[in-house]
Length: 574
Ligand code: ATP
Ligand code: MG
Image (cartoon, rainbow, N blue to C red):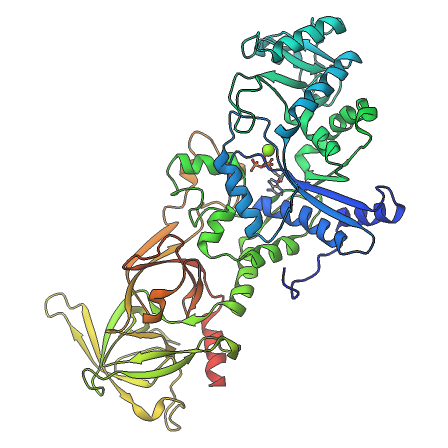
């Protein structure tokens, strides 16, 4: 992580951790974990959790006398939804974001045998029983928020009978759904999670890690607290929806305290939600399955792989996570905050280049055919260490079609018939003639003349206000550029999402493909994933899969906040 990044503000979780270190509660250890379920790709919401968990561990490790650790733990208790593909992508994304779990990668499935043994302990203590109600009966017994549940008729089974049935569940004697293991807590509890929750269910399903070894699987609620305890987690940080699960988390750990010798503390914080975005793996998976996007790493997706493909940098995402902070207040964060963190980072690090998205041919009549002159252009207006490159000045160039107007609105500072404009890094040109298609009347090209005395300075006798970008016609290369808008038309798609017709929420203009763009010749060899500022247009990223393609593919990463103000500032320095 770069030293220039801000140090994190002291949020309520960091305060708890600091207080625990002071009191010696965990013996100078701070152990957190990031526990994704491998049932999808990580998204920007996970980044918040990753930055928090790994961040706290790293900060503590940097404090003398303190051991700070963060485990990566795959919470793989539901083999129906999980895949090896997701495990690989999660590892890639956590590393890309800049965090390292060292040798502490675990799976909940690593602990299946121990979890099973602990369930037998609960049975022996009379704290768990095998329930043989059907799914429908279970639902009917559960009660509602206002009505207590009813006790299962199997609640009074003897320890011996429970142990026997549980062992036979494990041995594969029963089909799916015939029995479950439940905690014996309180069917009248106002907290639904405490109404004899399920600890184990029968699932005759192959598991990506344990193969066919198991046909009963622990539930998330049962496994999570115990995995935390077995790993010696001190602070188990999770999102607010688990607040109501905390009594169960504590109940299980209390019952097994003598076996475990450790009781992690669960602390909840609010989830990140982002305007115009859904952050739920299930919904993101629906978008992929419905073909609304091209895959989990489509540049419109809020997945870390999508953001990476779009040109987001790990530093920008880390800064964003720091700025949104950690609290218990849910809020829908504005997209502009994420984008401004990105712009800040790219402004410093992205080389400047020129590209024309909608080319209009301009013949510079004062330049001889075949003439090629090298013009030096700085790669960054402030950072001289980023060097410079050579642009080819030729008789024919392209400018952006919208930088020319025959009926200019007031304040139009670009090219007009008879008017002058400065070409970035090059000369002042004047528009002498507009050449049209005789039939359609469409503008085919402009004929301009250049003033050779204007390479470095503006002529004292003329006021040339506008600066526009351009590329050589003969030396530039054709490229495809994809421009993006938000994927959803509503700022809170998560709230109005309907499984049946979520596609009505999709922005039909979320992607525009421009196939006839022109880029500076040097960009032809730009490495995959590199991000550039196309002057005046925004930041653009070379597609990750485009190596070797005849025409390079760029994704528009993010726009410039105020291209004019910035360009004019730079111009004043010239
Ligand atoms: P999803 O709803 O997208 O499936 P999840 O919580 O089920 O999310 P997990 O793989 O279980 O996904 O999450 C791993 C960790 O990331 C958990 O600790 C979870 O609390 C955290 N997390 C997930 N989504 C967010 C979010 N939007 N903001 C902050 N933390 C999140
Ligand atoms: Mg989950």
